[in-house]
Amino acid sequence: MGYYGTVNPEQILPGVLLNVVPTGLKGLIVVAMFAATMSAKKGLMNNASGQFVRDIYQNFLRPNACNRELITASYGQFLVMTGLSFLGAVGASLLTPPTPREVLRKFYRGTRPFGWWRPLRGELQGAERETVDRENRTDILTLPFAFVWHVPLLLLPMQLVAKSYPAFWSTLPFFLIGLAGMYFLWWKPLLRMDAPAIPDGSAAAEPEVGLLAKKVEGAA
Image (cartoon, rainbow, N blue to C red):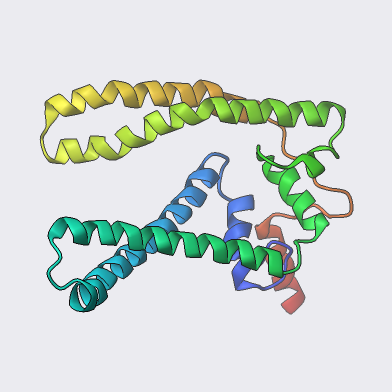
């Protein structure tokens, strides 16, 4: 069951996130999916660097290279791959048709990101523009606290497992400071925030349960 009531497996997860998962948890799930993708890509990059250094550089180009030279070659190969990936992404963006304006407008009004969105931001008027600007300022102020919170979040469980209690108690204050900053600067304003306006010409989506019930009734 998709977001618009059609049976489309590609839209099941977005439909569940929009209509079932509570606010706040949605962001954590999306970030978790991005993190899983980034970790998979990082592993591929590391494997490619290792294969280049061992199979090509050391075997054919520099058989007597020392470890320091091999490490430098690995860094260089990683930078080359990153640059080629960046050029490929930019080239593909320039060679393919642009995203339809209506899709960009719906995305901008739904997510309200900060950054280089001047053409779409210029379409906002009055209170709506002030709301987006205020939300963007809040997001920017929250970023340092998010970084301070995220690193201890990874370190604290490892320190507990390793029974490194002095390090745990030294890391815990940074976690609490980041958590408090995110709560007061991001979470509390998020609870008071109105739902984003749906652009003109698009119908509001019904809950997934209601759409599923209609499909069942139609099939019966």
